[in-house]
Amino acid sequence: MIPTTRAATVIALATGLLVSCSTAPATKEERGKLLKEAGASRQAWNKLDPGVEAFAKKGYGYALFPEITKGGAGIGGAYGRGVVYEQGQHIGYAELTEGSLGLQLGGQTYSELIVFENKAAMDRFKANQFSFGATASAVIPKAGTATSTQFVDAVAVFVRPITGVMAEAALAGQKITYVPN
Image 1: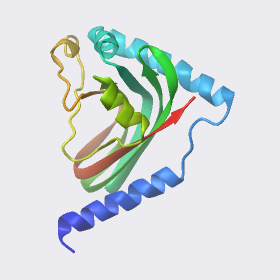
Image 2: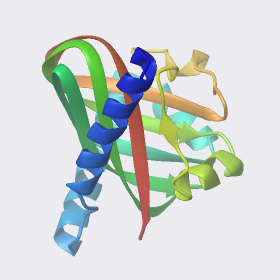
Image 3: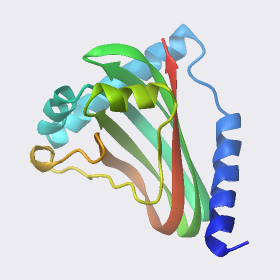
């Protein structure tokens, strides 16, 4: 097996293990808590850069993950739950899992906002045909960043660090699963 294929296989297995361990918010209380966390996260995003919310509203829909936990030491992973909006309406929930392999050490939590430019991108997401590979890029916002952000393949990704430290030069794959209301 060539090294790239081997790395991709390990990442796929790690992501599969993470996915098999998780479920979407099962109870009304868990869903309510996640919605409340998403509201607090939106306020934090707006405090950092008020243009982020305007950018999200400009898109067809978005997924907001209030807190994603990530850690790694050679092999890593991340997990978080989020809420999904289409044309301003809450339509469901999402789970994000990530597997990574490479030079990495540490742990962190962060918030992630994925904005879908059009219906086709949103439909791809809702059909669970959406994942990020090694070529995905994200914007870490500071005041005014959102106004210059562009959609790439009809998607824009914002990441807001919350806490922790992680050094990383790793190959990663991120999978997001949509669960309707």
